[in-house]
Image (cartoon, rainbow, N blue to C red; front, side):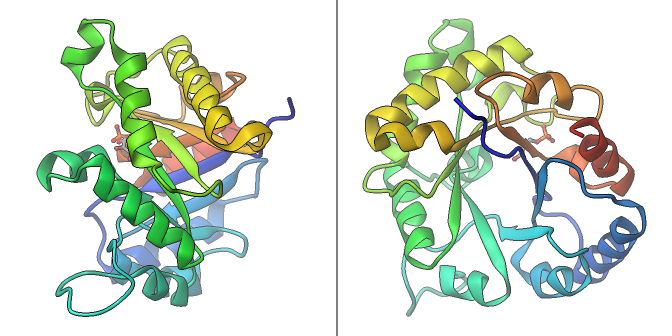
Amino acid sequence: MTKPRTLLALNWKMNKTPTEAKNWARELAGSFTRGTAELAVMAPAIDLPGLKETLPGGVDVGGQDISPHESGAYTGEISAAMLRDVGATYVVVGHSERREYHGETDALVAAKARQAQSGGLTPIVCVGEGLDVRERGEQVPYTLAQLRGSLEGVGENVVVAYEPVWAIGTGRTATADDAEELAVAIRDALRELYGDVADGLRVLYGGSVKPDNIASICAQPNVNGALVGGASLKVADVVGMNDALK
Ligand code: 13P
């Protein structure tokens, strides 16, 4: 199986004003040389136009959430078409923080992913178990159930991010073997859904990824990149991760 191109996806979460985002992009443009990985910045929606204008060519941008609806009376929501219009390629859906703090269910996540696809975006669908599930050793069935629910009716233009909740922002990273265990299980499930195309789909790992652990995680046969939170905020760390993947 030929590995799909590695994706280094940055998730800024609720950090950086539009001014800070542009400054970050200018700094990146001054210190970044393209590696083998594709780089994409998932930023607050309001940052995207300035980022798109300032980032080095070939760096993609994306949103962190979208509405499950196409348009209309949904105060506060942002549609796939709006993100697309400001140059987004991707959108994160079903991040564990949205599931936990905003009560998002698998069905809602699937509706968002379908909406992303019909608006021309590639959804990055996040799944992953909490500590209690991991301690019971039930991470594979739990994550696969979440994945199947979150991909209900979703087409094959999709990226899956496995982000064990206990590894997010905690400094506690899953081992490369833990990441591969879930990536294999996720790919098998993707094969059931989409057939052989699944071999070309990207399965990312997320959770305390940084310059010194990204290479060993992404070297796993079924891991095709990373979704990075904390270490995405400083340009030096992003350059370090990009270089580690060269
Ligand atoms: P950290 O890299 O800060 O652990 O966050 C991971 C994450 O939630 C990316 O979406």
